[in-house]
Structures are given as structure tokens and as C-alpha cells.
Length: 310
Image 1 (spheres, rainbow, N blue to C red):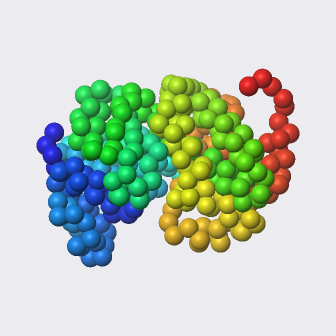
Image 2: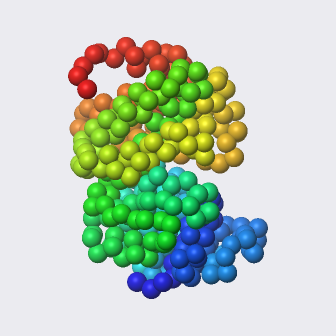
């Protein structure tokens, strides 16, 4: 794989990846729907383009709900790297499954883990995961994307890695609700810990590896998103916890909170056979977001669950 890379999507994450790769000496082509405001704001190795790029590797840094439409327009090229987290509404598909549908036969991996875009853009130290079943592919992508401040680990469980990236946003909304409602740090710690258990059950039930939930793409990402102030999902939950209606809470964010569309889509995906994988936190968040359950009702429902061993 050459040192050149293309990035589709010039939001916070796409531009952060562009800055990181430029620092690592890579030539970058960054596609933006509106390129004009970006010109002159990124390192010289970054070329802003207004035509969807092909090339040997294409990073897709677009919201999951727009991934299908963007990927369907890509010209032929090399491996695709999904740099988004969530579950597609209506289909329940994860990013790599969407890519397999619209770009059949094209190699694809997912980049995920506990990373805030602003810190990656600033060159602060971080670690992330490149997940793909093909060991050669994940090694090639990890080599291309590595840099002095970003350590990349391979993972052979892309299903589990993607589920972690999706579920953590939903659980972060719940963690924010706990904080916004003034329910205390004990409650938030308990919720995050049970969130890891919930994620582990989901991954195992859907065919992934339960241990993936304890790695960077699971526990690592969950801790960051449930505690870091840069998390839009956490801030959304805090606003809901203070009593703001959903529309007003979303309006305060200045960006997309992927947990909102992901919550119902994840519940759809969690159906295994004729039964639903036990996801009490995600189910409560989905009900809270669609208005079928109030915050205090959701808390009461979680506390009233039958006692059992951990």
C-alpha cells in the first residue's frame, strides 16, 4: 500500500484524521461537500477535493446514516475503512455490512476506539483499533494509519468492534441522564459497569467475541464517551436529565449525537431468533428518546429488575 490516502467527509473526525496523517508524512486527499471554508486551514500535505476520490485506500468519515448513499457513489479503488460508529436505521446493519452491500467484493475494515477528534487533531497520544477478519488487510491499514501519537491495534472481530462503537453512544446518553438528573457518581459508575456487561452479552449473542467488549473498542470507548466532556452523547443525556425535551437537547449540541438513531436501530439488531437479547439500558434509552418512558420511570424500571448474581 502506498503512502497516499483519501478521506471522504470533512467533519471533525475527517479533518482530524487528515491532520494526523499529514503529520505522519502521508499525502491526503480530503473530500468535502463544501470545500471552500477548509482551504488553507489544514497542513500542506492535505489536498481538498470536490470529487469523490478512489485510490488505494479510502477512509469513510461520514455519519453512519449517510454511509450507504456516499459509498454507493465511490469510484473503483482499494480498501475501504469505515470511520463511523452506529447502526443503520431501518436495516439494523453495521457500517461494514452496509459497505458489503453497496461495494460488494471490495475489502473493508473499521477504525474504532476511544478517540475524540479534537485530541487526534492536536496530536495528543491515543490508541485505536483496526478491525477486519483478514489479517493482511488490518495490518496494511494499521501501517498506513499509524503515527507517532496514535498506536493502532489489530482486531479479528469486526462485528464485536462495531457493536462496541454503536452501543457506547447509547449507554453514554444514559450516563448523561444520570448526571443531569443529579443521581450521583455511584449510579453512573454502576450504569457504565452494567453497560459493559450488556455489550458483552450482545456481542456474544450476535456471533462476536465476548472479550472484545473488554478492549479498546468496547470498555475503552465506553469509558471515554461516558465521562469525557467532548462527548455529544453524554451532553445530550445531561440535557435530557435536566428536563429538556429531546429536540431542544439536540439543538444544544452543535453536531450529531449518533446514539439517538442508534438506540432504536440497535434494539432491532439485538433480536436473535424470536427473542430480544437482554439490553435493559439500551432499551430504556430507546424508550426515553421516543417518549414512551419518562426519565424517572426508566430509572425505576432499571432498579426494579429482578435480583441476580453478577
